[in-house]
Image (cartoon, rainbow, N blue to C red; front, side, top):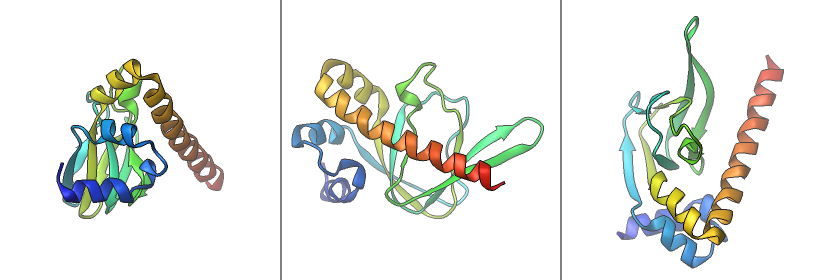
Length: 149
């Protein structure tokens, strides 16, 4: 693994306090990716197989409404995570993700994480605790957004 990826892992809040052996699992197969403004990371309905940890930039999480077109659900930025649909059947994206500005992410292989979590329940429990915290935060943010309308 290159030094920039190690530094990125150490600096992202998702990994804070994680056991070294769990970090090793997460880092295996991790890559870095960059996206230009307006570039789509993934589309609703496509197979979900990646977990993105945003290093810098902003990403629009969008839903497609047949009658109303694309609707902004939430804007995510540095230190946020994106995509947990690889954890749950039918393993497809439920939203679209689009870069709003030059964006850098760490990409984790969802299939690798899922298989490893099944084999190593300690790792799986730690991963799920962290993902569930994100899900709860997103639901609370969405609730506040809906109530503000």
